Length: 387
Ligand SMILES: NC(=O)CC[C@H](N)C(=O)O
Image 1 (spheres, rainbow, N blue to C red):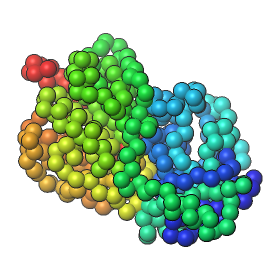
Image 2 (spheres, protein in one colour):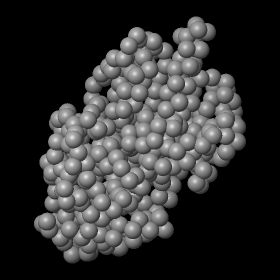
Image 3 (cartoon, rainbow, N blue to C red):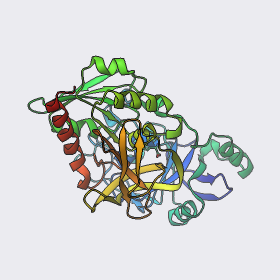
């Protein structure tokens, strides 16, 4: 275990010991407040190019298993085998567990980080680092250990020479190379196309459990490709990067809305649908990452505790209603902590999306009703005979 340093672009340095692979990694430093679910977090393709800092002080207790990874369909995941691909650029923790203990575990977290070449650091004061990121915002950073540990100016130069997350176009880098199909459990009810912008494994599973056949397609898919699959509806997945760069996905979404196909989106998918409806996005100071974030559904006034991972958001506020080329739309959900937009809905049509993760891997299951809501819309549209 060698010395290691977490270097932030503003010159702050936290010194500790290496965790996982030794070497250098660069990315945007962000923090996640989930007390559990590190395997799902590390394998979520939305974390591509981010160095994740865990606020939970001890990490690794349940080791690594072949069931919980969220990256099975994504680009390059095949190479990682059943363990699933780790997408985070680096991992920052206070303390690694001494003993792994879980009946499903096939090995330790640290061994998996080493196997996949993921550079991490342990033993820093993660409370101080999180307070810093809260006060000054998510920023570019690097973790250095072994031969890559250098004098501060050299490390800082490397950190400052990397591109910012603002303006980063990353969905194509994580999307599946070829389409694949998840078959429904039980009687097939409907068929949907899921556009993979960085889709998590549990999302098609949630659809399949409700009787949907899911064609997962690459981010470069065209409207013609989608229509050839004769779907009853379309899903836009979560994904990494700045939604302001996702112009192709926004154009595609506009054409899907033009076809009046039912549409559902999660996280990046929410930002894309919002943009297709005319809203703009902005980079949040430090974002929302964790599994206990309260969201208000303004159609019912009910609050859900949700899983989240986003650093960008749609402009807007609770109760905002607006005209779009596809009809009237509204901000359907906002965050109870800071009022930011957490969902949009087309009032004159069947398209809606949320900024959080109803597939909840990891996380609470409060928002699973949204999958049922999508099925209700597919049902209603099929009965009207518009598809
Ligand atoms: N989980 C996601 O889909 C994240 C969306 C986007 N990359 C953001 O950070 O806001």
